[in-house]
Structure formats: C-alpha cells, structure tokens
Image 1 (cartoon, rainbow, N blue to C red):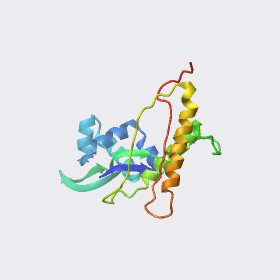
Image 2 (image 1 turned 120 degrees about the vertical axis):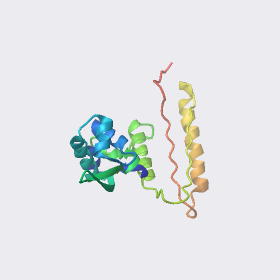
Image 3 (image 1 turned 180 degrees about the vertical axis):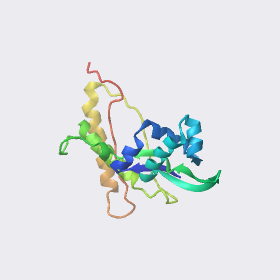
Image 4 (image 1 turned 60 degrees about the vertical axis):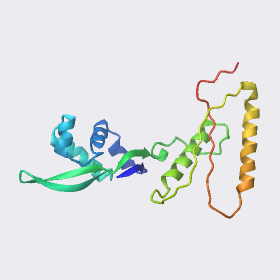
Length: 186
C-alpha cells in the first residue's frame, strides 16, 4: 500500500468523491472482503461490492487475494493508498491563466499547484529525498508590509544568485506568504 496516491484523472476523482466510497476505503485500509466491510458499515455485501468494483476500476483499490467461503470465491480487497491527493488540475480555475502579480491570490494558487505537481512526481522509492519544509508566522504592521515583502524578495534573490549555478542537484524553492487571519488596516 502506498502512503499517498496522487489523482490526476477525473474518473478517479469521481470514483473517490462519494461519501459511501470514502467509508469503504477507510475499511479497506486493511485487507477485507466485501462481506466484512458490509458488516462493519451496516450495508449489504452487494451494495459494498458495487462501490468496491468502481474503486477497483478507478485504480484506488486492488484485490489482494481470493478465498473460498461456503463454496463461493470471495475477493479480499485493500485500498491502494493511505491518503488520496487530488490534483488542482481536476478542479481548476475558470478562464485562461495570465501573468499574475506576485502579490495576487491567483499567483499563490499557481505556485501551490506547481509545488503540488512537483511533489507528486517525486520518486518515493528513492532511499533519500532531501527536502526541507519550514513554516512559521510573522507579524507585520500594515505600514511595514511593503518593506517586509521587499526584504523577503531581496533575501530570496540573493539565495538564487548564490546557488543558481549550472552544477549540482536541482531544487525548487517556493515561498508563500499569505494572511493567516482576517487583515485589518488600522
């Protein structure tokens, strides 16, 4: 079972985004038959099998074994991942993308989409995936906001210039700065 499955196909999202199927997936974190899942959810095995079949078709669940119960072959299924991550491309935004101001929400959404796609494309089977995640909160008074943004941009441009050579491992650095609560300009 994978830790995360990145979903880029609309059929996968459609199969996943039904409340009953999410409950079935939760039950299938460990291998179970449709009969076992049905008992846990208070459903009929036929109803659960219908959902499992759709999840299998979408590549979200796999049959891991089969066993004989009262003369009938019964499949044992397991979820393909512990978590499912929807590509922003499945939801998207209306209209054409255009060059966006660095301070706009649209630019931030584009940045997050790029980071998400990059992370989803990483080879998780590699023994080492050097990465760094840092998060924090900074409080800036409204009259200092522009200076803060200018200082942040200058610092990042210095890092890009210092480490932007053509040799070595390539890393993408993405910094997002956004309000954590409703802003009030005093």
